[in-house]
Image (cartoon, rainbow, N blue to C red; front, top):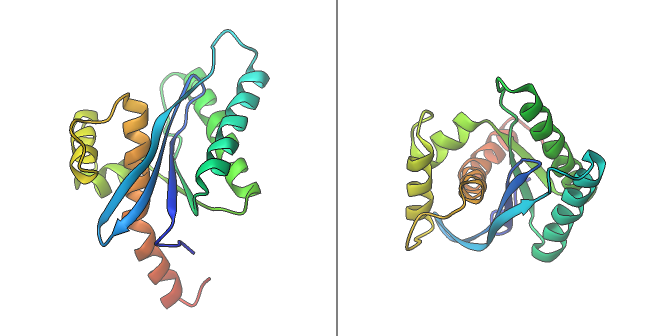
Length: 174
């Protein structure tokens, strides 16, 4: 069950660039950025080493910021199979790391994230960045795009999770 006062670690999974954002609810409909950035792994390194490095970085974020939930963007089918595979592997590392720590894990499709943040499931990257800027009361849109996407994923979770919890409770499910 989502702790509405807790922190959310949003993840835009990727092997070369993995965006992350830690948001904390600061009041009704408001939240603050605790941390925002991108984890990078060198494309020249061995796959196992890159996945291990990513796992270490994700676990360090979890240790440092103590989120109550981890929200991840669902791997979306891409024409480039190699890219889809690496995003899937990165996503698996994140999901496993969060589950091992006993954290709530939520996975959202790109359309769900866009709908929750911009009110339009077909919103452009620029529109999402602008809405993240407005919702987090930033001077300018967050960059790089991977970090902005991670913030959007965390915002989506903060918006959606309380309603999902109410639905589960009303249906008698934990």
